[in-house]
Image 1: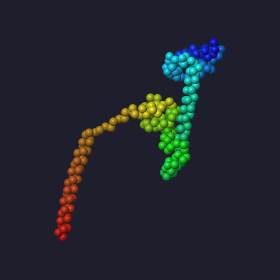
Image 2: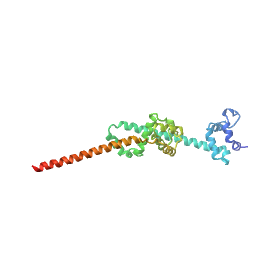
Image 3: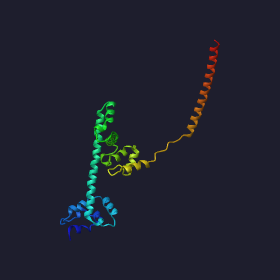
Image 4: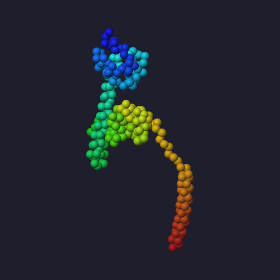
Length: 232
């Protein structure tokens, strides 16, 4: 039996329960099995669920391709997150070096002459860097895309904590998921004190009546003055 055929019979259930320490030294596949046993059970369960009933669920070779691709993409995604964080930090350093408002406004108005993106994008990157450097979230919890990370900067402290509990402060968090969370937040309705409003309305009506009375008195006095001036 070939090496490939012998490995096709390995089920995901068996892989999840396999301890790398149980592999015998004579086994010709210790490094390959170790790669699979170091994968999270959640990932293996996802593969089993998505490809249930297909040949792929029993094909160790193609499972490895999925896992290798996942590692490569995740690694690149994390590098992207570190890159836009570094850009944001550099832009914050630059802004701090420009002391006058005129200098900052001139840079903003000509931003794309210096950098390969617009000033609005730069503003988002600066806010992301400030969020991380202020300790609101850790660098390792930063979503993989700057557009998703920026959505977190729009949350208040309590909202950010709620997002964290829902797993949205994480490298895998997407922009659409965070936006959906923001829309779902029920902000407290403003309390209306009807008694206070009635009192205020009464006070304003009284004030208006007094002002009208004063206006009538002023007009009357002006007429009297005009008559006296006319008699002269």
